[in-house]
Every structure is written in structure tokens, then in C-alpha cells.
Image (cartoon, rainbow, N blue to C red; front, side):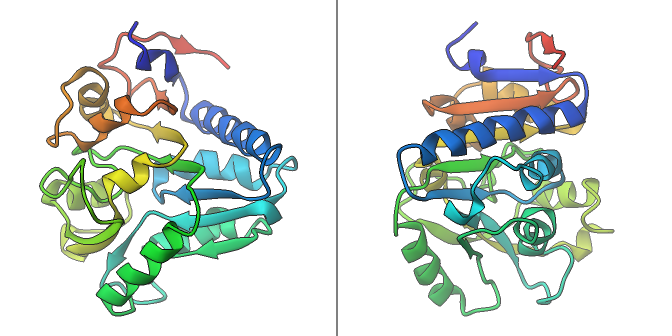
Length: 255
């Protein structure tokens, strides 16, 4: 077992993954608040995150008035009231259910460069304590697809063109009916920005992600699988269901 594999947990059922990840994030928040006044968290918006977000939304232990929330990426070109906006997903799953100190969302309806400047300033206002993320079918983290991922990216947030495989995943996930409906552009936090988070919690579900999971944990460090960079982070915890982890030799947990 390699050093990073000790931080991998595999569960037989998807709901168990969400609960385990939610408990871990909850405990991390509580521990951080023992020593600081505010916890800053970057959230991903994807179906894989739903169980974890549901657990957090029901938590009675967290003082949410000491938590600042941000999202990590957003489509460019969707109407403001679109159900597919990541900001709307997070609002429905968590932000509307807890009394957060502050919510900072990427606004892709603003002028792009102005928004990049504004959001970069917000990100750098203080350290990022927690990043809750997933892994895409093409190995992306946030919208850092293989063609645009840069492990030494000088930018904090940038505009990107979405890889076709990434856009197909959005259809596979049930977020859009056809690939033609999926926007081609987005704003995303860069790989170095995500990696600067003190604690990373990575949740991945489904057999369609198994190849990306295998490449992340057992393949070389490579831009062809951007998520492979996660194995270099000192505090990244992985939570998979058995289907996502079928390419790994890691036993399932029952609780």
C-alpha cells in the first residue's frame, strides 16, 4: 500500500460514500474552528457530491456562520436562471439550507476578464482551508481538462474551452439532454489554486469514472490525467464507491 492509498476509502453503496465524506468534512471544519475564526471552503457541483452535501446540510454540529463558501467552476453562456448552473446546484443542495457567513460565486454573466480579476481577489483574500471535489471521466479536476490543465498554471482562475469528453460526461450525468446543449466554455479555478487548499476531499462515484480513478492513483503524474496531481497533496482524502474503484486493489469498507 502506497502512502496515498492509506487515504482511500471504498464503499459498497453510494449513500455510504456521501455519509463518510460528509462526516470527514464536518470533522475537519470543527477541528479547524477550534483554532481559527473562519473556515473557507471551495465546493464542486456535480451529482457525485450530492450525498456529501446532503449530509453537511443536515449537520447540527457546524456553526455555518463561521464558514465562507465558494464554487470552483461555472459554465459560460447559460441563462441566469438555468437549472444547469453550478451555482444553482450548490444553492439548492447546501447554500440555501444553512446560514453561511458568506457565499462567493463565479458570475459568468459578467465580463470575463473583470470576473477573473474579481474572483482572483476573493480567492487570495485568505487561505483556502477545504476543497471538496471530484474527478471527471477524462481525469479532470474542476474544468481543468487534459488539453488545458497546467500543474504550474500562473493564473488563479481562467476561461477554458471544454474537452468533448468532458461535455459528454455532462450528458452521461443527466445534467443535459444532448451534447449540443452543453456549453463549450467555462471559468475554472486552476490546478495550483485547488492544490493550495489545506485539506482536499475527493468523492467519485460510478463505473464510468473507474478508468480515471485508476489512472489517478496508479498511473504516472501526467496532464493526460489532471487528477493524478492529487496524489502529491499531503492532505487529500479519497472516497469511492465500489464501481468507481473497480480498477484498484483496495478492500471495501462497511460503515
